[in-house]
Image 1: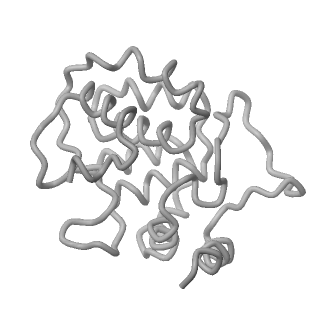
Image 2: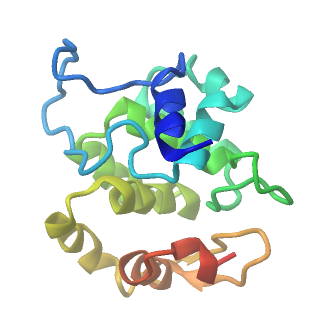
Length: 183
């Protein structure tokens, strides 16, 4: 399948929110801007398509609120790698929930809730991933700078060693292919 066909397939997915200038979508106050592709949210096209086609993502359509989505992250995520353990085609719960956050369009206040959440490093990590994939580059440092020395531990991939949240944030800033060095 060529790249154009992949994008057409993504746009045709029934559970996918596609931003269209003619669409009468209500923009929330303080909604974070999405930089780049508003169809895939800058995820790999195959990953985005697999998320949209996954049964779990379809189930997530029942969740309507930000706080319920955060609860789901708490209950379902034990890593934040893109693919489910032992697969290269099935998206992880974390990335399905990340897509859910993209579709919900997080506000600044909600982002602060994610980044400073006391209950789970995976809630925080999904906040950082949201920013890494959608934040305008000139604004990214403003979000990440205060977390560079964060000592909370996280295991980003099932087989990875523990690292600090600060180390995870640095990887998100420095690495173009973040997952190659982590998983």
